[in-house]
Image 1 (cartoon, rainbow, N blue to C red):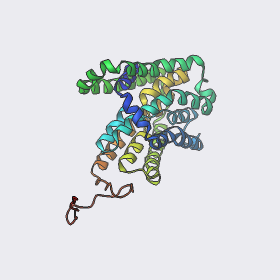
Image 2: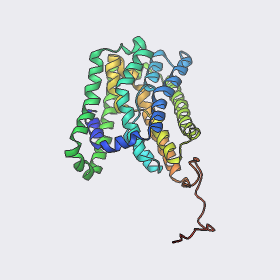
Image 3: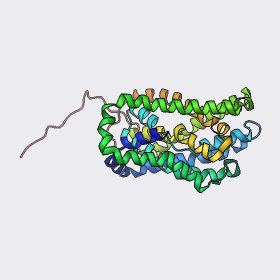
Image 4: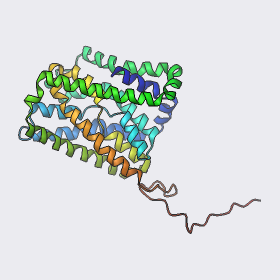
Length: 304
């Protein structure tokens, strides 16, 4: 995980990050989706206990609602859908950095004793695993940035390998802790159904909400993919610190949601890629297709 966040920091251009701050409305929208809308939906799911979800599974569901957004998959899906990739890069990075502080604070506030409480030592562990490698990558970028660009494909394999290793470790810990014996197939099916509703709600809210706020197609795509995702790479180390021995069961909803969001967003990204381009002359009205070139009268520039 530390290697993953080091690479995230080394890839993010400081100039790109500063330029991204100019698009502050988009970034505030993504942060609001990640750390406001998601937690509110998670709190609303409290009514599913105990008929649909056990208290332990609900705690994991609420925790996933507090985790920051992803970086790599948000960028990948935004690129496939022909969205605003620089905005997705900055939005995912800002969300991950904000989550280092906001996720533990929200967990302490909303999960209470089930999260084991937030201690200075726990926060320090999270900072050392996530923030310090990211800042180290930023600091060393001037020396290693060119190398990362030249070996982009290899680093993509490192990204995917790191995520697979994180997932494997989490599932292995779950097997050792015996969580698969604690969750019946029926409960697992109900959890998947609840997460499907949660994901569908966030995908709809981010897409149509961004449209109502006046964002164009490219920005709406970035908001949808960055605002509806949850990071397994950031969530697992946080859960191990916050939940201790109970972390394996607490991250089960996050692991399942992570796989679900990848499969669903892959389909959406391919469909968005077939959407018609927007006409830049429509004053930012989202979703307005470009008129065909046939029959257009192009004014001839005059001199004098």
